[in-house]
Image (cartoon, rainbow, N blue to C red; front, side, top):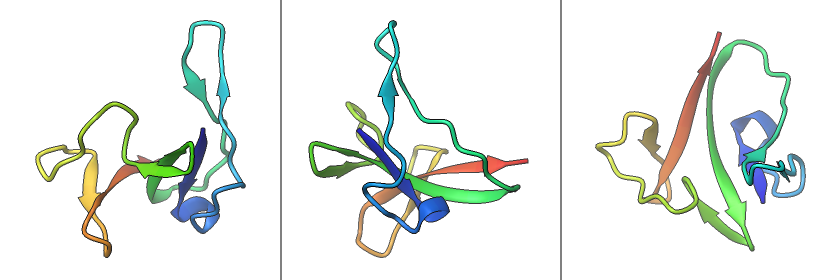
Length: 76
């Protein structure tokens, strides 16, 4: 699984995630304060969150230019 977003120019090979012993996926990024949009790339497929349908009702999602949703995080 890969984490791609505005923090790495949406590169699908820049932020590989690792699975811990509990089965959770992790990626550690050092980001300056700001708002970042991101998606996961699972087996070559882009998704807002694995196993979750992103929608406009999701407070952590924003629409993108492709008609789908991106996750968003504010780093302070």
